[in-house]
Image (cartoon, rainbow, N blue to C red; front, side, top):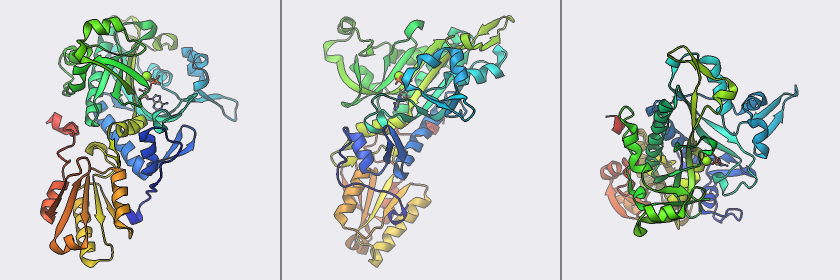
Length: 454
Ligand SMILES: Nc1ncnc2c1ncn2[C@@H]1O[C@H](COP(=O)(O)OP(=O)(O)O)[C@@H](O)[C@H]1O
Ligand SMILES: [Mg+2]
């Protein structure tokens, strides 16, 4: 993409409404604009990141056997009356009346709708287990929307729903999602801690929140330090999954609501005790027959008797992750994108548009990298070098390739690693080879799922 053809309204000044770094940087880097409190438009640069995150989430859901659907944002109130949640949900639910005076709502979540679909389509245990997911906008009329996309009112969520014949099978569905989540966050360049969460009246050990550490996070976490260095599991979903997640679930990790100070002291050695703030980026939950019971979602079991199916739901805050990744990956100068989600992997800076040799070498590099399938932003604007450098640092592309008249005359390109600041001058061939892969400083986790399958 040529910068002169692009829509990238970066800001020089810090916007006064932004309290945390990710919100500030998203506005400054021209990624989003607020439309109303907690409601955002995604501008081209922000949308690229959102789509990349979405795709990684999707790949890992598919790998774990979940099947994609797409449910609407608007739902009829009727099914929420069936489950008993229409009144309970309270003011966070945006209620709408259509021209025929029918009650609709903007979905804050989709348990009811997916249960209705499943109930009306599935009759036999032979069609279980199934896990259906979608990636769709949600609306929750949060009392205090804040921190930009982090706590929005309209936000993009991946939500999956599992259907199983009994609790044992539901446990396997849960474990698959647990593994898929660890892998997803790892590929996004994040270290997420699975913390035990409240299961409400159902009880048991089948609810976890996935939290990434950040000072600005709204959650408080208490955990064993070893959880911060555990690598994500392989995508092998056929083996004994309990064993695979055991290294994560056996160590103490709880958020403030579930924290037990005495147990923490007893279970975690003093030098391993981590008390930190974090951002909830995912939440998985087994709820049993909570919706299937009242909504009549039942199938015939092997013995012919009807059973209410066992359900679980599994959410990832896709739009929140954009902010979450920035909280984890930035420096004084701006964002430092992990390769896997960078809006462009490479920024080419032409220091002197109009200079024949500089234009030729910059154009050649841009064309070559683009043809290789890399995402390249080519800053060909006729502006001061200082402004271009600071803009490029601000938007945080992993590699920068700088070409000026002197380098162009010598056939040299200066490559900068955005994260480390390390610079080196290379000829065309060497530059192209280096720019085709993630900077060595990038977390190794940012590898495509294909590598695991091979
Ligand atoms: N207001 C919001 N803005 C952005 N993301 C949100 C918001 N509320 C929830 N999410 C994301 O969706 C995921 C699933 O939501 P859920 O656990 O149902 O929400 P909550 O924890 O607020 O009850 C959360 O882990 C979070 O990442
Ligand atoms: Mg939650």
